[in-house]
Length: 152
Length: 190
Image (cartoon, rainbow over all chains, first blue to last red; front, side, top):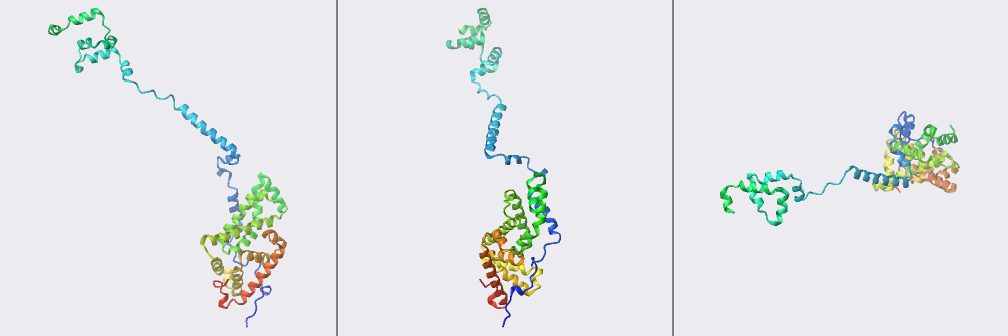
């Protein structure tokens, strides 16, 4: 027959029935706990103060920062780029003397006579570039070779 | 240092760390052993003990001094233990007996228990109790805590705690008495 086990007759193993923790455990534990709850000041986050600011104020700050960044980028971006120049505007920028020299050079096969024969509606353009006086025109015509004059 | 002195110093930012250090030194052993008896393994007990004190730190400012600091800390520790055991079961989809078997295996590896056959039977019998009943048994049998204090910690009435404890004692005695029979094998019973 089994002997009934009675808890109140069993010698109680104090308040700690299990094996003790490693030596020095309770000496180190406070330091380990403190390291978790109160980290050293130097390791504090630089923006930790932001977490203590109310949420509405944080939203306001974020919006202001965003708008400020946008405005600064616009301001620092400078004036808008100029529109691409039209052909006429580009041509206006070239000095007249340079144009005449180019047109009367051998490569373009245009001579003073071609310029003189421009259609009537282009006369203004001819005048703009050549601007001859009557005497200059006479002198130019007189200087043409006789064969060419005969063709007129 | 008395609890009220610790609490007063904790309210002052300059002495807050010092006060909390004193609090940890004062209660660390009781918290550790309370947790250790529930989770058996030292490493688990170590993690949980630290978690308990971190929670104490976070909530100490809101501590209402109409309760005892000691019972308040014990309540945090108790909740941590029960959550830990519950999450362990959920995490590994383990039934009740498997977690009990895991704790029993750790217990049998403990050199303080392994060499004493009757003590090993007793500890195995305690492990077979449901978590909350085991907690009640530990507080009453090992810590010799008054039922009124236990009621503050567990949020249960004194009458219910007395009934739970006596029922736990009866189950333990029955298990240890019949421990040699196959029906008393912890892996098969319950």
